[in-house]
Image 1 (tube, rainbow, N blue to C red):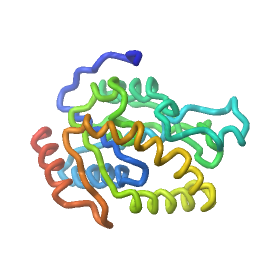
Image 2 (image 1 turned 60 degrees about the vertical axis):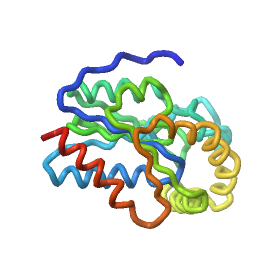
Image 3 (image 1 turned 45 degrees about the vertical axis):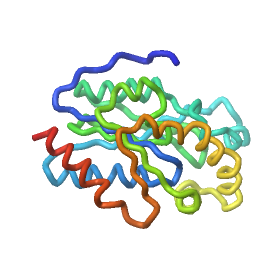
Length: 218
């Protein structure tokens, strides 16, 4: 795999990578972690790899709908790595915005400012070596298939304008096969794995992370 850049030296900055299957709860965990640590006066930033799907403007809408978004090749890793390195150097980035209803990158962008804590979350947050080299700590969220599928269907219908038939087709056609082939193997890259199959995030899972972060920024 090609090298996208060199590791950036940081002072006090801490980067956490959170991966897991679709519907595992990684985004919820990332947000909870940021909310909790903010109460200690530590400013954190959420860096979602969902913003870094490759633009598909060259394809027709029908071709975009048939595109395999669950394969690692769908992610623009070079840009994601560049942006994380920029944040780690103390500078802001213009982060792309992905339009999941049009299946391509929006013309809009959002300003993301650096923070002491950067939490990177996504299906393939623990996949490429170039991302792994940037993290201070790596977490994998594991969830039962039934729970994950229900969460995924709920999100796709409410947030991304999918029909039940479309959600089902994607889950069976790409989500589950890609999870087994590419996502699940990245669990071995994690320092810590969380089993989350209920409604609430396991308290013990966040307690250890928060304690570690507080010690780091003390």
